[in-house]
Every structure is written in C-alpha cells, then in structure tokens.
Image (cartoon, rainbow, N blue to C red; front, side, top):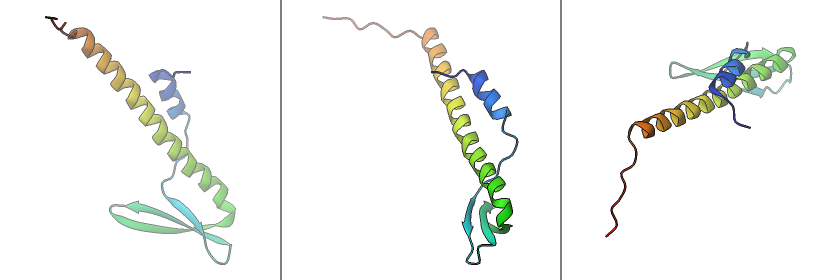
Length: 96
C-alpha cells in the first residue's frame, strides 16, 4: 500500500518524543550509558535503569522519524520527476 505525502507528514506529526544515540548497560546494572554526538563530540549521559524503557521508545521514535522523512523525500522526488517528464517529453528516435 502506497502512502501519500500527507499521510507520511501526519505520521511524523504524531511523534512526540525523540532522542538520538545508543544506550549500553553499565556493569552494576543500575545505570545505563546514553551516548550521542553533539557538535562533533561524543556526549555520555548516565540514565537510571527505570528510565531506560522511555529512552528506548524515544530512540525508536527517532529511527522511525528518519524512515518517514526518507519516504517523504522519495515520494516528492518521484512526483517532481514525473512533473518534469510531462514538461519535456522524450524525443522519438528516427529509425532508418
């Protein structure tokens, strides 16, 4: 089933929380490392284990956002190419 640009934008609008990066458990199991890049630097934050489920959801939302924006761009590029093709029909080759 193909999506329309409007449907993709609506799905993007429904994402309310996002976070970049990765999480890794620390040895003691009570905290996790949340690593992300900011201005060319690796930033590490310590996250209590009880906050990990919501952080995982925010990380998944960011990945979904990236997928949706790529799909949106693909649709708009396709539409742009179709519109350009209408303005400039292919020339017929003469057969000799």
